[in-house]
Amino acid sequence: MNTYLFLCVFFPTVLFSQKIDYTVSYRNIENDTYFRFNYDNDYFDATDRNYTQGYSFELVMPSLKKNPINKILLAPKEKIKRYGLAIEHIGYTPRFYERPEIQYGDRPFAAAIMLKSFVSTTNTLRKTRLTSSLSLGLIGPGAFGKEMQVGIHEATGNDIPLGWQHQIKNDLVVNYGLNFEKQLVRILDLWSLQAQFSGNLGTLYTNASFGLNSSFGILNAPFSSSAKRKFNLYAYMQPMVSVIGYDATLQGGLFNKKSAYIIDDKQVARLTAQFNYGLVLQTRTLYFEYTRSLITREFESGTSAGWGGIKIGFTF
Image 1 (cartoon, rainbow, N blue to C red):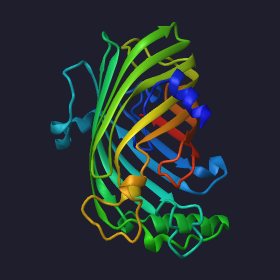
Image 2 (cartoon, rainbow, N blue to C red):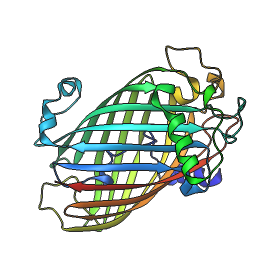
Image 3 (cartoon, one colour):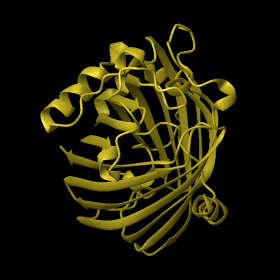
Image 4 (cartoon, rainbow, N blue to C red):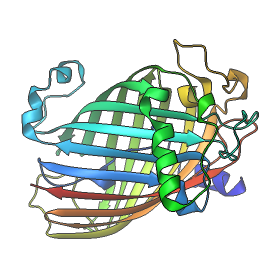
């Protein structure tokens, strides 16, 4: 815990609530049209609990400006705008996922699937970026978390999960999100520092966030309209502190109260610390990233957790 307190003091930033975040500037792809696949798994941390897996398919292209949902997304009248859609899937399990009985005192089984519409607006003069999004989907058995984890474990020869019958019940996911960044310092194309604010309001996650992120290496230029670089290679750090209002993956859906097991409101950790770090390699047409994350316990009887991920994208 002392490590997390150190990070919070010297790198005051905040968690963006959702586990898969592709709006932050260090994941910028310098093209108006691209596709990116994001995959997370706690296998990278040699564990199989808490946030056990997540993936998303992200598409950005100018024609998505016609998406009618964009009308309710906040998007200032700046020159540089990017319009996108993403399909996201996330899954959570307790430590003893192979046991058929409820694991009282541990995290409940939970899975969610969502379709996200988003608009990213960059002001190159003020060096700011605002991304607004709306996610619509489902948490519960309809998100096929059981089928996915069982299939993976069967294919890899691992223990078969038997507790999914106790997962969070089906409920509606409607979430509105905002993420704002302001570039504070940039030294040549070697180091940059950004301030951040984000907020989420909805039936899956509700929170408010503030913080910093930093990149160093051969950098791209997410807050500039200058010519695109042919090659970028850089590392990033993103220590976080998060204030939690509501988390349906722990507390159950907002409308359906029939889940067999949830974490009581009083047991939810309202303040968590997280540290993300990784390495990004980009060419003019390709994007590769390796990322790792650590987080403190998210409920009183829980434990700290970790996971890793890869991201692969290309422009077209």
